[in-house]
Amino acid sequence: MSGDLGQRVQSVRKRRGLTQRELAANSGVSLSLIRKIEQGERDDTRIETLRRLAVALGCPLTALIGSAPRAPESRNGAMWVATRRAIEAPAEQVRAEPPAEADVAETLAAAVRLYHENRYELLARILPGLVADSEVVSPQLRARILQLTGSVMVQTRQLRTARTVLDRGLAAAQSSEDVLDSASMMVTLCWLLLVERRFQQVDELAIEWADRIEPRISTGTERELSTWGWLLLRGSAAAIRDNRPDDADDMMRFAQAAAVAVKREPRGYQDYWTTFGPATVAMKRVENAVIDDRPDLAVRLAREVPSGLRPTSDNRNRHLLDVARAHLDLARPEPALEILLRLSNEARPWLIEQRLAKDLLTSLIGRRRTLTTEMRGLADLIHLEYCVRSWHFRAWSLESAIAAGFLRADPGLGIHRQHDRRTRGRIMNPGALGYLREDVSGSRRQWDERQIRVLAERLGYDLRKIAVFGANTDRPVYRLRVLVSNLAVDAVIVPSLAHFEDGVVPGELVERADVITVRPEETYARWLIPPDAPADSGSR
Image 1: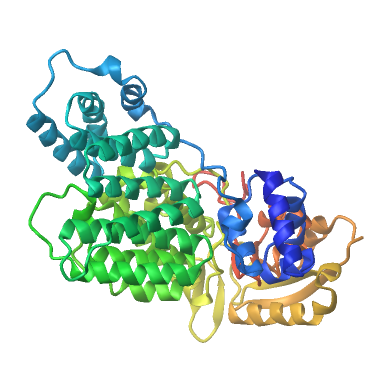
Image 2: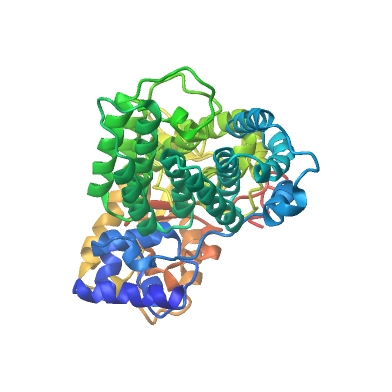
């Protein structure tokens, strides 16, 4: 995809009349990274980075990544081997004596409950038999079995298998001649396409099927309104990721109207329409705000989500991760950690599968020199790698750093690093070093220096020097390390990643000090020192 991606970025940039340097300044993406993307040298660019470019270019994200981007890698956990085998060779799994349809339906209901309750080990034992039984039951029941199986495969990021089983499920649903079964299957297929980053396909399918089944708001049944509402939520999710916020808002408003009109009837927690309602829409509004880089709005919207939600809902779990991310973006580490701990108790198997959970925990522990027992337990639970750096979240405020235990406050006297030997015994503000490349700043140099001073003051740092290097400065990282040591500073503040070679924060610099960027405001914290390492051993 890298070559096509580079051509698309270059084409849109030229149509907008921007140079590479101007795009770097507008997006906060480093100039060297933009050059490498356009030259087809980077095939691992994060989707968040590409969305920043899309926002700066004023285009949909799909204009850059195309309609068939590379999907995230499949995990293919050993737990689901038997299920995949049943999907790949269904004829070999058929039982000698066909089961009664009522018995299969009862087993399906039990399996759906296990799925929503995150009891994956038990579900993994039941699912292969259900897939086998789906070969000998009615098309409608077969479709619902395959929809559940497809949901499990998407949830555990086994995307090729998910595609296979959902295609079969859609065929079964269409043969059942129940258009709502087909539309419900399309909801799950759109989820798969969202994970695969095929946002344009999601948009087309969601709109097509929403138009096909659109009910009258005043007279529609619960099932009609809920299936229609879920299709609109999928379309809204695709639009916000594709940098089309107006389209996302429009579909969200229609979904909200459907949710308000739903008259819930008592029944088992089984199908998609039983998970749709005002709470679902409220949670998805929070998710859209997080994707749109509006964490303050996300936190406000989260307060409007009805309390008392089903504690086993995967949608509710995802919502809590979104809230945790918003809190981290707003420099509130404590509520973010509380959410992760809560999910580790209530939805452990689900949490392990979530990449966002790893990113959040990486950001949390990357800012600490020592870890609490709970943090170490979480890191082990989700298999977090050692020597991780902070993911791209905003820098933390001085007050939040004090509350989290990274700094200690002495009322009336100032603050100092809690665990830093260089300042132990002294009462002082933590020191910072400003840094910029004059060839990168160009005519903006004075503005960049001012922005460094303003950010340092706001975060409570004592800015002791601004180092200005040029394109021909020899060994710039080594020089910065020497300055960090000589000035005994805790952080290096830089206008953007464009001021580092290849747009990457040097690892040897992060070993010595936090690196904070002004545009966008993010912190790359000192590398994690494992709790059992010697106190002065440095990073691994």
